Image (cartoon, rainbow, N blue to C red; front, side):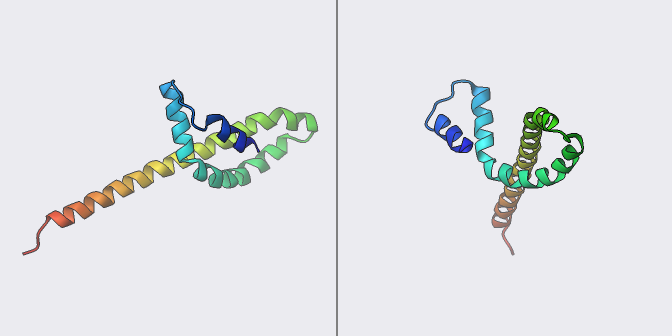
Length: 105
């Protein structure tokens, strides 16, 4: 439900702030990767948090920081994956172009 609210909020909006616009664009381009990687980050991160969150009060205090940390790590990993895939794609396309331009005798 929260993702739907966020989607509706930003749907067809022109963000004037260039920095915020860039951030929203990068997040939207990597959202599927963030979603998929967050499962792995959850599996690695939550057992560590459970050792500290042994009371409801501690759980409540750690909830927001945990969500922010999991999202941030997932975002960083998704962004790295995107950059690496873009480099591979660019390298492959340049390699194909160079193969086409070299004529065989």
